[in-house]
Figure (cartoon, rainbow, N blue to C red):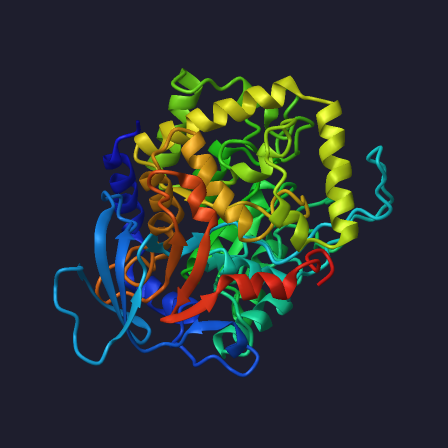
Length: 495
């Protein structure tokens, strides 16, 4: 079992972001709460007020052991107190008996998109026609995230950044239900992108200008993509840091050691897309293996792994674990969830099942070895003091649906060898810490934002119970998960 001190050391190490940087960012991502408007009211189960959630099991997100028979007192948008059920409850407080339930912090999704990848005319043999298209899921995604307990998320790459910015503003105004949003600017992609909707950077100056423009529009983070060059990435990092913003990356042309040396803040997909040892890797060119050969050959605890992890920790580079999207590539490993199938359109569901069946017929032993290595490397990274974040990467693979995928990520962290309490901390406090918002969200404590989840069951004993979210509190308002899910049933993949 991994030592908890690794998680704590990582959180302390990443708290280097100064208060001068964090203050304006916090005001944008977590603005003052607004009362739910007419379109949101039907999904409110518990209006904000003076509330006592009694007889709950408490998992506070700090890594501490669960506390039994507790009371969480809410006062509007804030947590007023956390106390034993034997302590007196103030007069005039609405009491809600939560016997049999567990309360934990709202999930902080660090790789949560608002779109779905479509493959035109996909057939059962896996053939489709160009171009690859990326329709926006502006209606369904925010509701699914909130219903599943995600109270804050980073879009981690936007295809329609103006849509994401406007969506965030409407959520913040109480006009649309959804989580708090850190809007990532458009993908910082280099030449030869397979996505027709992505701008392809021309040079380093174009990268700098792109970051500057979208920061002026309101983007609060940025993501570099597979074909970006070292010069372009370096320019983008410099401009983002000049504005007090952070940049992450799903890389390929640039290796992890190169990105760390350039000053990147975060790397996506655990160790899956590090191409440093891929055969035939050329500078500033994405390798054919896209990182699988490197990961398959990087044994946890071995010299290459130990050197890379030491480099990342020394440079304060966080990693985002996105196990659900990679689990899908291993035949028969990912569960076929009825609730995910029910959320999707018939067309999206059919496309997913085509892809799932194709993978079952064509197993990839090298990738399966890479997957096992990544689990061990993520544990080693945390034990070395690295800050591990969590997100599912819902990008059009029907096995990774917004919200449900975030819950699956927590479950897979437990599969990787973390305890349920550690997995919950990675999925809550660690994301808040990286964002510089740990004084507001990520744990349950007096004075913090009332962003928390009510789960029917005990995730500390059975992590799959994290799927049983009944109510998600955001800014002290309790949203009805079942009603939010019902409102999007059969629509994910359409809008």
